[in-house]
Image (cartoon, rainbow, N blue to C red):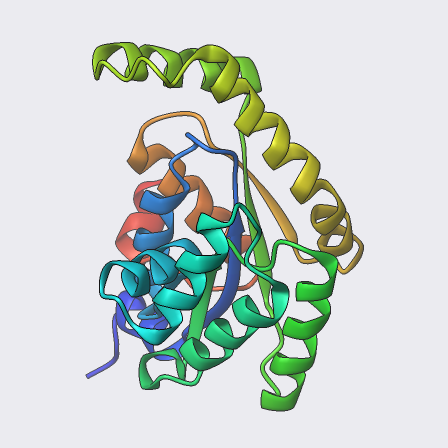
Length: 214
């Protein structure tokens, strides 16, 4: 019996990176992409929080750094990503979320993947109008009673994201890996756009019935 498109996508796997501004629903889309290709959604933020919460050796090291008001050094972040990509569920690919954040981390990732003979296939960038995101997040903060999440604080996070990711985006654009996707809309709309963009790049395929309907 021939495999379905969904089964072929999982058998294929994928090696991807996703970036997007705070509030663009990146985490939700990352999980969907991971399920589509049967690959782990590797979020460095989630890994750090897990280790801190569980009081592991790594968690204690990270907590001490964060409590001191310092950034987690590249060497430590690289260490946890390397270890995570060695796990069995990442044998057929991965979706990186929150890493790399610096040009040095990009270089490290290049070397790591080159050793494995598994280069990055695509970088998905969720693109959204900054003012619309700020309005959405400000409304959500008001509804949830988060008085400290002011428009000024939200705008600052958006600006930090734009400043930090700009150099990385250019690197991936020059390599022909960047895929821009409109990040505004409901979860399914954005998810469908991501799937279509990946398929256009030769990554994954749609179910024949779905493709015919569209």
